[in-house]
Each structure stands twice: as C-alpha cells, then as structure tokens.
Length: 349
Ligand SMILES: NC(=O)c1ccc[n+]([C@@H]2O[C@H](COP(=O)([O-])OP(=O)(O)OC[C@H]3O[C@@H](n4cnc5c(N)ncnc54)[C@H](O)[C@@H]3O)[C@@H](O)[C@H]2O)c1
Image (cartoon, rainbow, N blue to C red; front, side, top):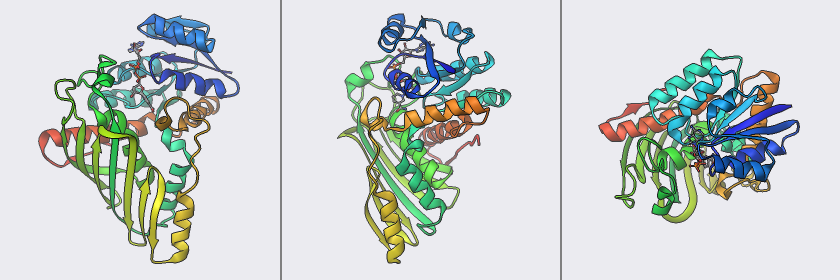
C-alpha cells in the first residue's frame, strides 16, 4: 500500500485525491491546508482520516510515503525541499517554482535524495494524442522540422484573479498566463519537439490593468535545439475558454493541429500524409477527466506513474528536473521580456 498526503486543499487538490483513490493499493491518509476548514471539507468528502494546518505534521507522519504539493507557486520550493529532507517522495504541481532560484533549490534537493521519487506535474504528457505526436516526430514522419507557430487563447477574468491572494502577483504566482496556463502547452512543445535553447519575448498586461501585476499577453520566438524555429502568441483575455492551435512545417509534412486534433495535413507523399492524419485525429479520452475539462485526462496516468516509481524505486516519467526545465523556459521568456534581449534557457536535465 502506498500512502499519500496532499498539501494545499484548493482547486486542484480533488484531482489529486480522486486520482490516487482510483489506483489499486493506494490510500490518501492526510490532508493539509493553512485554512484547516478546507482540509476538513475535503477529508469529509473523500473519507480521509487525518487533517492538519501545518505541513510539518504531514512530513512527520510516519504513515505518509508520498506527498502531493498543491499549493501556490511561491511555496513549492520550500515544501518540496522540506518533503525530501523529511524522507518523503514528492510530486509537485506546476509551475515547479516561481523564480529561477526556486528551481535551482528544488532540483538540488532532488539530486541530493536519489533514493526518493521527485516529480513535477505535467499531466498532458500522459494523454495518448500527445504520446502519438511525440512518436511521429521521433520517427521522423514530419521530415526535417522547420517552423512551428502556436497560438494559445484562454479566459481569466478579474474575478478569477481576485479569488486568491497569490493569483496575478509577482510574489505569489511569479507571472500570469505564461506561468500558470500556457506552461502546459510550452511543456507539450518540449515533450513533442525537444528542448528550447533560447527565446526572444515581449509581454504585456492589456486587459487586467489595476488588477494583476503580471502579463496577460505574450509573444515570443523559440529556438529549439533541433534547429526548429517557433513563434508563439498567448492571451488570457479571449472569448474562448481554452483553445490552442498549432501549425507545423516539416520539409515532408505541413500540419495544422487545432485543439490537439489534426485539421489539415499535406505531404509530398500520400502514404505519409495518411499516417500523420491517422496518428493525430484519434478521439481524445475524456472519460477519466477529473476537474475542469481542459485539465485533460492525464493526472491519473501521471499519479499512477509516480506511485509505480515509488513502488519500484525507479525515476518517474516526469522528473522534477524535467518539470523544472519547462518552468525554466518560462523564466527565460520573462527574462527576455525584461531585458529586451535573446535569453538562453537554463536546463536541469
Ligand atoms: N495541472 C493542472 O491542470 C492544474 C490546474 C489548476 C491548478 N494547478 C496548480 O496547482 C497549484 C494550486 O492551484 P489551485 O488553483 O489549487 O490554488 P488554490 O489557491 O485554490 O489552493 C491552494 C491552497 O494551498 C493552501 N496553502 C498555501 N500554502 C500552504 C502551506 N504552506 N501549507 C498548507 N496549505 C497551503 C492555500 O490555503 C490554498 O487553499 C498551483 O501550482 C497551480 O498552478 C494545476
């Protein structure tokens, strides 16, 4: 039996609790929140035995093997390092950290405890359509990759930002739409197309002035290690709740991919064209979505992987260092927007 705890009992916590509770031989034994009533409410709903206000009680609980960190971005580094030092396996929600120094500390703590599992949540990596896309690229079906363009549009209202004191602040969230929402799609780009070495960016607050200190809009250029060039535009002030469109040009295949389904595929070779279309038009699995639809169905798959990593004493599929590298890409975008220069991405794996 792997026994789990969740620190932070806000919006995302039920997705972790429900994820663990669907897995065989896994039990959630302890919930924690600074606001004890939030922990108590979830404990009652999900039948969890212990609650506490102080995370140190969770880390001192001898029954707990694995801790989910589901708190605001600013607290992730402290909680992850404390969990590892207390001998607990840990999985941290995105963004791994709020600033580069957080990422340095967390990755160093994970490296100092190779006997423990340290993972960062990027649940979309566990969805079949993303795995299929990665395979396609890895097998060279697109040919030599030349350019990609990603537009991500979602909606975050002023009321959303007022719903939590950490949201929309530099100190609490570390950024706006990039570090919180678009980070999922930046991770998908890394997952499918490989690492980004440098970025050139511009950010702005176009519609949330006086409400948030951070960006609601961004445009940037990505230089991938493979030589692929990417351009991205991001907004959280759109009438669409959550929409991502991607255009990819390879020297063998041109692809338009709308909300993660291929909508237009053109290749020199008809057989190759059909292969790409077949791989990228499958139905999405929404049966096991827990939480909002755009959270996708990946949390259960990722938590299952983390639990198996704990049982088998192996690294998780998304190591903390890997998750931190996606957060580091976000940090490089912020740095470039500040300096007005091309900035290199610090990599942790
Ligand atoms: N993977 C996803 O799809 C997804 C979706 C939503 C949120 N998230 C991430 O989950 C994390 C939490 O987001 P949320 O929307 O649930 O936030 P939230 O504000 O709703 O909940 C966070 C909770 O953590 C508690 N908390 C903060 N510091 C604490 C501490 N030291 N000890 C105990 N409790 C503490 C707060 O009181 C609050 O109840 C963020 O990193 C966010 O980016 C991920």
